[in-house]
Length: 265
Image (cartoon, rainbow, N blue to C red):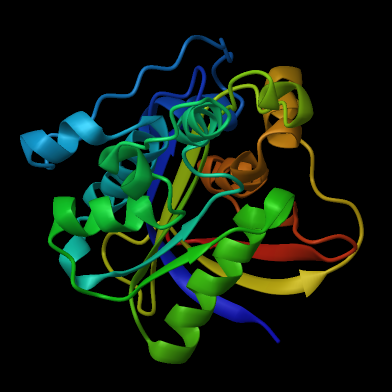
């Protein structure tokens, strides 16, 4: 079975990739890639109290989600949302583990409510005012593929405009040694059932086998391999090039996802 949707907006943030417009020439191969430190501000759309409580994972998720909606000139309040991450707020996870391993096991309310995997969905609702359905997924290294399948299904079956928000961040030590994610990263895709004046491409997704596509730029390929949500970079590269194409993305081995891309010219 094939699922299709129109891609109206993209959000992207990662080392050396400050936004989708900044990353387009890099992914298209017309500008060089220079990795650099990643800084992400708390979204100003959050009230001051919530803004102070946001960790890196929530900042990344909201930043890319808002960029995808803005670039497609879409109202986030009217879109369903799918959030997918292999770990969520890993700094908070580490802090909770340290408290639970200590003699004083009192956990702050802020740390507790940020510990759940759906915390970014809650902050998204506050920031955007959305009362639409929100789905939250985790599929380890297949989290990007799982999120893409869920979002495409909502578009195809329910007819909902849906924003897919995928994000990851590093763990502190000692967990980093066991799960070495090198940097924070986020990708968001605004997917719509019908073509609009802002549509970038029509995409069609189906299950496949074989090897996933790789990136020719070594540093970007290293990010793709190391960070689960960065598995979506070959799809963004195909959109950046603006030509018809097909890419194969990692999913849950041995399955892969084949994505057909048809630019909206």
